[in-house]
Image (cartoon, rainbow, N blue to C red; front, side, top):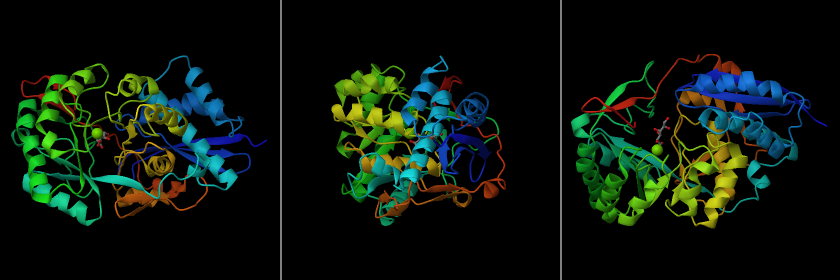
Length: 402
Ligand code: CS2
Ligand code: MG
């Protein structure tokens, strides 16, 4: 029987910081897992190196479900982003290995293709409405059928989702940058640019918007109602989702579809949102929600309630997660859409991936496993440097959700 012989944790900063787990079996087969948690990379690296890797050596890499249960129930302390990202990295690496041993791409192990390609959405942004409109046109010309639109709020300047330069990267400073926020200014401005996009560019593409946890439930209800004529594909994270019940109030006032889940890390965190149909898309991911094994459980629960998938896919999720997401997206019956932000060139020097973008969709070649390689020599050229996500403060100085 093949056993796990080595598990290495690589922390590097090619374009941005990533944590990558590589597991090697006694037969010399390797598997990759993404363990990146934006702004808390070293916490996950330590959890893996100090508390997980020693437990892996000598175990059977084929026993993926048993490994998941062992890593979830074994530590006694459960859930949370650090734990679930660490479990995710091991789980994803074992699926990679299983695919390579079987000589099949992972999606074939998940039941095969349910679709020919994975529809994605791109990220248009701008310092003002005019710049945003140009960026939406650019994404449409690149072939995107779906585009997310975010513009800076005039009274508070730059805000989340607005790219500075070629690649969007919110974790840009060695200590958390404090960004001003005004809900009133946002509620006055955001509907105007979304309406402008529809009036100038029409309705023959999907338009998405990320509220990014900024509103109270009633403010979110008001926002959703105010943009119903815009026909958003979804409004994302309209209010913080620790209180799943809060979404009932939004639902009572608006038919604008809701997407939640990128910061949620287990089926328990989305259970009521799904079973009470308080959301329309669940955004949990391979890297932060316990890997392919747990994500499939979440997506299967969602399928029972006609909730579709819409996994997070920002550049702070590595090309390993993107590839694993495409394998899952190709196969699940209740696929909705996949977020896709092109990684920086430096990132792609380190991660070589079989994921391809064509006509607004992603697909994979038939390489066994996940189809991603990690070049640790190239990674060594990009040392980790501490980077933090911003903190939002209201105009009165009090902390707000970023
Ligand atoms: C955003 C992310 O892509 C999204 O939907 O919410 O860019 C998010 O801000 C980052 O992933 C945080 O690291
Ligand atoms: Mg988001």
